[in-house]
Image (cartoon, rainbow, N blue to C red; front, top):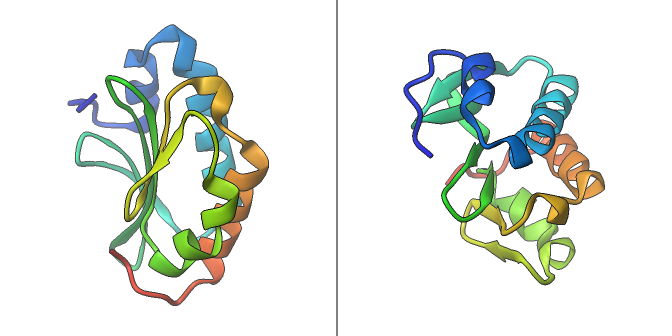
Length: 122
């Protein structure tokens, strides 16, 4: 869902109730691990920038929860961990068809790898 919310807190108030806890947990992990990143709203959803470049984001879309990991090397390194029923992947997007499909251990690994990455942003 593209939101007109001005802050991530406002955005989280708008999301469907069945997704709220998962999105709040993703936000908490982002805030914990993405030190030095700026939390902002862009493209209708929460985004985490470093040096003015968006590297991570998440969103409640119509049919899935999207986690956007925009460092290509990070996505490639985690490809095997992102296979499974109810999960599809694009160049910089992980789509979880149901909230319970989100593996927070993998999300944490993706975030930690993003902090260390100097790879290309897609």
